[in-house]
Length: 191
Image (tube, rainbow, N blue to C red; front, side):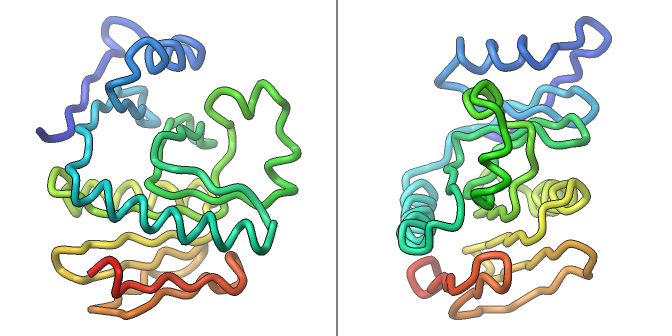
């Protein structure tokens, strides 16, 4: 199944609370919402992609437990970006002080914050162009570092705030730079 985009604006404009309730009432469906208010219905990942997502997320959790620098989020977490979009990266990380600045209610629902770091792992139902647009949207909303990993082509695109996209062919590791100090993702477990 591919991603489906529905333009609801001619009929209804969902409030943030209505979108949140729609997601809660349909837990088996993964929704995102574009900055234009389009409802995006995403297919679940297959077993292979889901397994790699878990492995990658575990690396982030272990690193974060050791450094205690922030909060790690999985692909089920929706974030309300400054442009109004609701997005769910495969992995996200937020510095602790930024997370602590949110209210309890903001933390409970879709946090109104752009993560400091995001990762998208291409699945068979993803298109490169749409995922690149999503990565660009993250950066335009002040995400500082983003990785787009395409297992099929063994290609990684690195997105940095205020810089051109860097493309790596068959890298063996990715470094967290100054955003994720000391973090190293071993790509031999992904490719």
